[in-house]
Image (tube, rainbow, N blue to C red; front, side, top):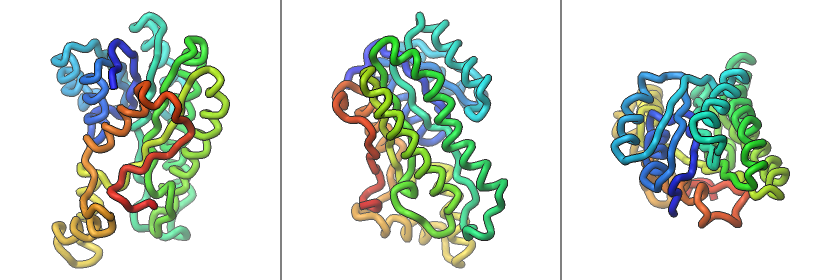
Length: 260
């Protein structure tokens, strides 16, 4: 899966699966623009990418802010001679955890839809003209298995990931004639700080240990294990490569066998 000299934008590139995805793209040969709100967290990842011999730029960007997204894409074009080959949308949030549908406030609902759906819409919208003009592009959005199956206590998050599937499929249909692929990778639980918080909250709610909470999650999956950031990165790398040239508008669950 050779990405030699491809130009890739990664939003949310520094933490958890974002870092794994960033490094996987760099190891495959891509040069990178890294975009996120926390530039202090991005800087160590920049150093790791540079150590691999790739060119990397980074910029502060709130993906829910249209002006900042447009400025980030303009900076990418300026830095890499007008080319953008790959967009990976990792930036996103969890929304309210463990709240029923009727306990979720309108503001909580709107906030997570804006981050998980509108944020991806804005970045896709900004890069699409470049990809269409060059007749080449790969867009990979990070969805979630709660966008493939409903989940009690996660109505706002689930709605956002179902919405992301919708805009991705419509974009795939519209961009297909220009040789632009649009797909979703849908992780289940992934090892990292967010999963640790989920386990801690479950342990507190059920009066069990954090280790027992982790085991309960793993037991839900056919493979009896929780995904790692590298598991997600491998799927992204495939969809960002020409090995996936004939795949578009699809949702690839990487969850150890839960959403099936």
